[in-house]
Length: 199
Image (tube, rainbow, N blue to C red; front, top):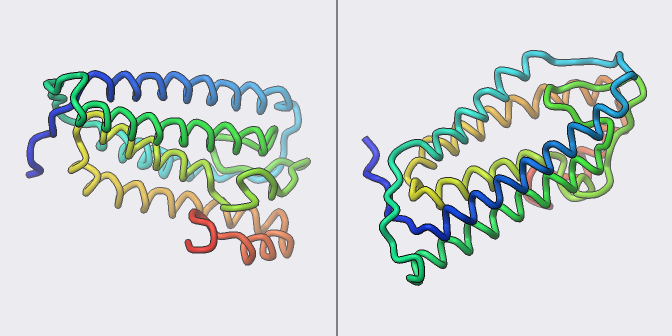
């Protein structure tokens, strides 16, 4: 069994709450932009990605699971450092998600799919990594674990998130190769999946 949660302070929880609110606004914006062009149907869709989406959600939930001990002095260095790290991770997650969804425009969707009028997006953050939204979700998960004092839960959450993300990416890459062929192969040879130049 994993040890008890670390003590946390209110500033870290406030930073997380602020980040979650911003993320919700960015998500709503992405959905609205995608719905504007919802009349165009067709293309390919992989409904099995719903399973991997659920597992990603479970992993993120596990990172936040457990009791939260809000006992640190709000002005203590530990409390303020935790808040700063949490805020930096959440702002990074929101920025990366919003930048990605704007670059995708009508191509953005929750479930893996392509459209008959889709284009291969290689601009914005996609010029640096092929899956920036999953990087953003990973940052979100780590920020939540830190803010809640549940960093030990990342021992379980991170491998589960990595596995679900890998499976989801595999489905999406199959769809993209079927849709864009050599253009996607050239793009995937040039741009790494998650970390520029490395992974």
